[in-house]
Length: 77
Image (cartoon, rainbow, N blue to C red; front, side, top):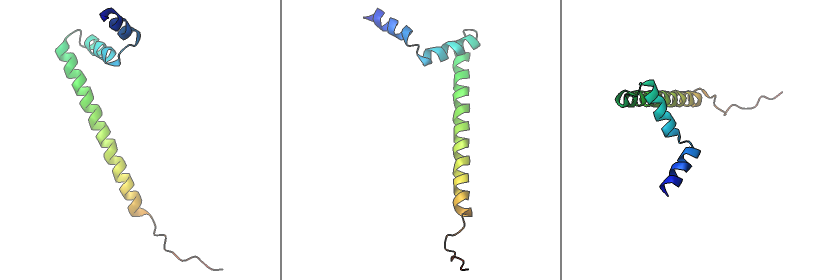
């Protein structure tokens, strides 16, 4: 049963394993450095996502404020 699970895991390469191997390779096998790099990258991505969300929120708010009122009477010829 265990060998089947291991074979299935190798067939469907887990992205977590690939990411952890990449960070470990970057850190020359030092797990502590690899973990700190992964956490720093994750926090950086999170801050960028929050910044983009705030920017979109401001754009939406300005769009509603700058919208011309639709109460103008039609022009007769």
